[in-house]
Amino acid sequence: MSLHTPIRPHWKCAICSDEWPCHTRRRQLLAQFYGAPASLALVLARHLVQACEDLPTTASGLLHRRFLGWLNPPTAPPRTPSPPVRLFSDTHMPPAAVTGDSPRPPLRAPKHAAHRLLAGVG
Image 1 (tube, rainbow, N blue to C red):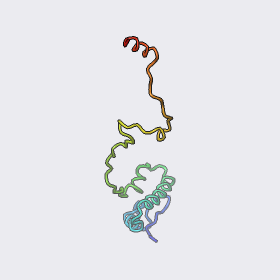
Image 2: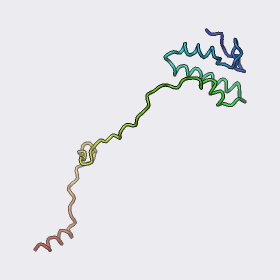
Image 3: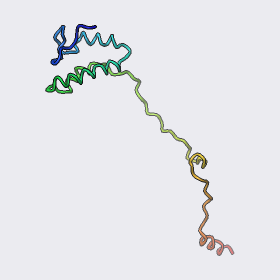
Image 4: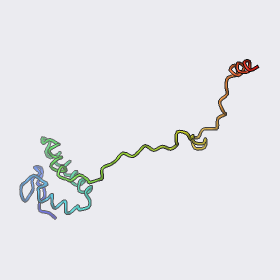
């Protein structure tokens, strides 16, 4: 257990009187939560909420920087946008079983158009 604990409600370190978490406590927390950065962030977030209650006149942005701002952001590879997913090509229509549609009869020309065509053939 660390001796570098916060003295509330002022959130000063009990050993070095620096703002908590002090430099020493930060190093200890990093060692304690090595490999579990999300857990460390959750613990510090809990302390941040308590500090916001104890220090209502302190800007929340300053407290956020003090409690969480020193953590390294996760190092994830940069995301490259993936191409849009195409289920079907432009020339292929899915079968009715896939779309849920019932099969449709082919389109027919209106009767009056067929009569005009027949009248001109004769």
